[in-house]
Amino acid sequence: MEQKPTRPNSYLALAIISTILCCLPSGIVSIIYATKVNSLYEDGKYDEAIRASKNAKTWGIVSVVIALVGWLLYILIFGVAMLGAIANGGY
Image (tube, rainbow, N blue to C red; front, side, top):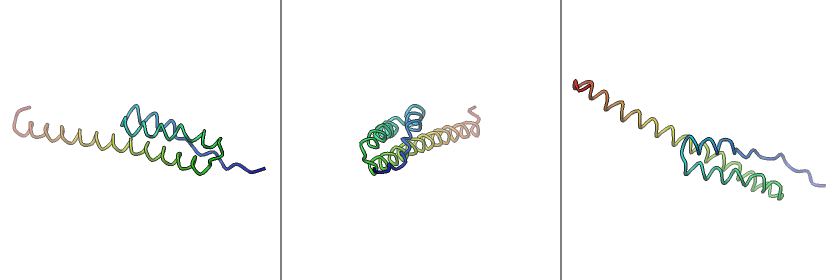
């Protein structure tokens, strides 16, 4: 009997949270990979399950990073605009 390796983490929670709160397109890609992990593992495709797990994690992190960069740019742009308005006495 062949010993099964440990089931890889699907990162489904990260995928769902990053889709809802962060960046929809990359979050959806993360969900797609996350949902493949368990079925690939059960089919005995352990290497593919590990690869899908890594891809789910990577795309989840990409989604969070895109959201953070977007928020930083948003704050920077409006922060500079507000400081400019204050400096010119328009506020």
